[in-house]
Length: 392
Image (tube, rainbow, N blue to C red; front, side, top):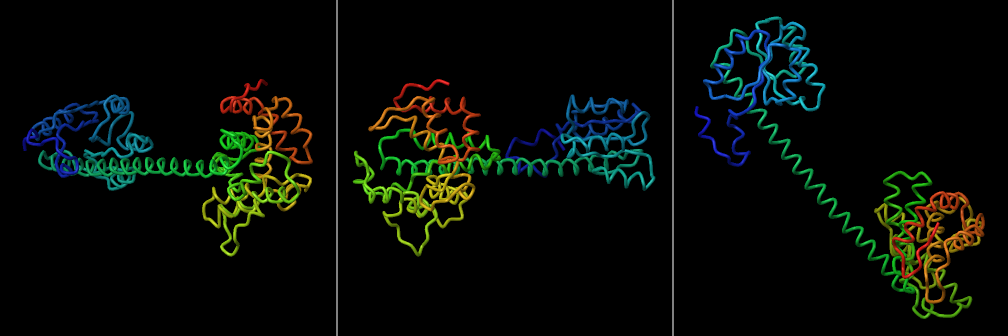
């Protein structure tokens, strides 16, 4: 059969065809055996050969020119064919390389051991040229099919990875838009949700969260104030001090946020519960991100001493994620310019946070903040809102 008759068509169309340009490596301690095999194969159309009579050079030869198929003798000095085969199968790059054993040995135990080590086929010496060609073509056909499946699998995996990336980007964009919806109801706070997310990430890393948890809490933290969607403009945008009733309403953004992200179908959203509106927007949900966002929305105004809202939780009864976001959120409010105030200096922000130690804030979270203050300042400056950059 003339190898020139094959065209460069779709690989799937050529799975039953022999690749006569395949690299054929022959390892045999007798040079005459190598030359005889090469002559037979050359007559059949093969022309790409590598060979050695020194079994110790086998792997070096293969590494220089990776074989498509290996023809291997068994009984050789220094290293036997079984030794070479065993070493090959321990190396990822040669685990699927087909090996055709050419041997005069007729010991069934040797054949069984070669099969255990992954030999593809056997051929007894002296070699019959017709049988050699057929065995070669069969083994290479199997290899071509396996290679095709491997490439197809890689292609599918890459498509899945690409689609997953697209879904993650869309999901993150949707989360950010929802977070910004709550932010735009409030005063003009620019990059507030981004900064709070980044600060939260830094603190979670410092407190030992694993990589997946860190990614999750950064996104969830951006939704901490989504419950402000449910607060009336007259209260949310009031320039002066809120009265007791108005403050009671503004406090409910926590519950509103919790319910937005994890709603109870038997309860209605009420403006009286901003601390409950946020969580209602976000649930009930099977999404780990929205469940965490619901927890954060409902607990980031709780205080370590129990004087916070909406539930008056105390100490470690407050979810750790809520305690982390409490520090991140207050720091950003202090360090950001607002219509009613200028941004405080970094040192002034630290002073105010420390005044709230073991009262408003979890001491362990404040300690983590202090240890990562250089990173906090970097985020503060990177996402600055028309303010003078902070200095350490």
